[in-house]
Length: 193
Image 1 (cartoon, helix red, strand yellow):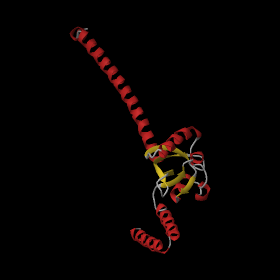
Image 2 (tube, helix red, strand yellow; image 1 turned 90 degrees about the vertical axis):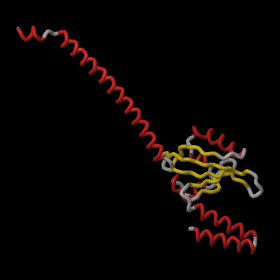
Image 3 (tube, one colour; image 1 turned 180 degrees about the vertical axis):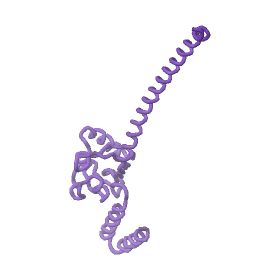
Image 4 (cartoon, one colour; image 1 turned 120 degrees about the horizontal axis):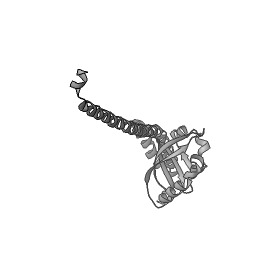
C-alpha cells in the first residue's frame, strides 16, 4: 500500500507539471483510492447534509449502493426522525468550524439499526470556506451490545447479591434462635426423663 501511495504521489507531481486540470483529476482519483482502503466509512456532505461522497466501506455498512447515496440528505437517509434535531445542531457546530466525536444509531437499508462512532470535521473549499462535513464512521454495534449485556449482568448480579445477603441474615437469625433454644434447655433434666 505504501509503495502504491508513493507511485500515486509521483503521478500526481507529473500531472501537476502537465496541467492543473489533470492534476485535479489525479488528486481526486488518488483520494478516492485511498478512501476505499479505509476501515472507516467516509461520508462527505454539503452544509445542508446532502451526500456528495461515500466510500465503499460506508456503502457496505449501511447497505446502500454508493450511487444511491449520492444526492440524498444523510440525516433523512440514515437517521430516524427523532435524531434529526441532534444532527442539525451538530451540523451547525461544523459550520462554526468545530470538529467532534459522537455516537448515533444509524438505520441500515434493510431497516435494522447499528451504532456508529462518528468523527466529524468541517469540509473546506480550496480557499478555506466551510462547505460541509467530512465524517469518519466506525460500526460500534457489537461494542454497544456488549456494554448492554454487561449492564444487564451487573443489575442481575446486584439483585443476586441482595438476595444472598437477605438469606444470610435469615440464616444468622435461625442460628441465633437455635442457640437461644439450646441454652434455655436443661439437658440434664431432659436426659433424666
